[in-house]
Image (cartoon, rainbow, N blue to C red; front, side):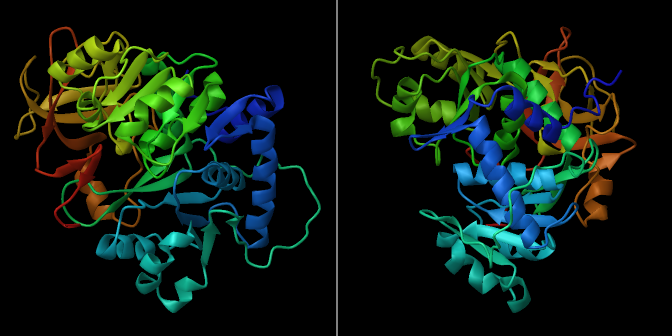
Length: 418
């Protein structure tokens, strides 16, 4: 039996969720709650609009959008149509952005109206006709929308378990951006690992500050469907407003990347244990930082390791082990190798290689980049470019990158972009 089964797909989970728990709050943003029933109705309307524009299963649709409820609606709408989604990092500018917009070969691009001055110089006249902008007060301004009678969404158009669901462009450490192909099975595996490492239970309230162009945020959307948690969605990370939001919204779980814990530790002390949060989980928690965070805020820290190419999370940390990133997920195999490619002993540092124990959990490759795919995946093993070690108790340790790069809030920024 597959550990991550063929079905139910994320789309099937969506239909089950809205049918069985119509009043459940999927997400809250800027004081507005979006229930399962409201999400379904908005998705149905958006699907009609997209179909009216000629968007069909297998079409590539890119978007450069800020965190908001419209974006959640759009993601599920494209998912139910069966389109391949290309979220674009809203911080990108100039050559990196121009490369992605051209390279992804999208049939349609949706973006915030505020990004129009940035995008206009980068797109050719033919591509400009494919742009739709979102006005913050009026949602999307669709091209010539027609008054189409309400219809019931059909379930058989969504992509299968191993069809491409997303193309996520990641910087890596060197060279131009690479579009990681992410399947529905990979997305559900990421959500499953998140559920385990965060000990997610029904009615948990997750603070979602990560941008929805990042796998760290996208993987939480199926988690709502699986565990019936609710999302407290915010526009962006704000250290000064972080704890006020956690307290006022009754947040129970928080996710961190990069130096987020360090940033929060630098904030002035202010009734630090007056909150309902139980667990902080994510990537980037050195032992001294994790211990200081737990001692000050009374929140258990669980560090994990992973990358987009391997269904986001390679390791799962359920016991809060400090210094390590937990144990390898049950559907992955990890080995640590030297520069010559030979496996090293327990506790020794080398490159982390990952192989899936079932098909479909390592990316099929990089979009329109066979050379990069061949370099990264060899004989079934994903060469991560990360250094690590495994001890005698099978705890995995992250030792950094083989090649230097700049990290900003959990994102790699390559020298090519700079």
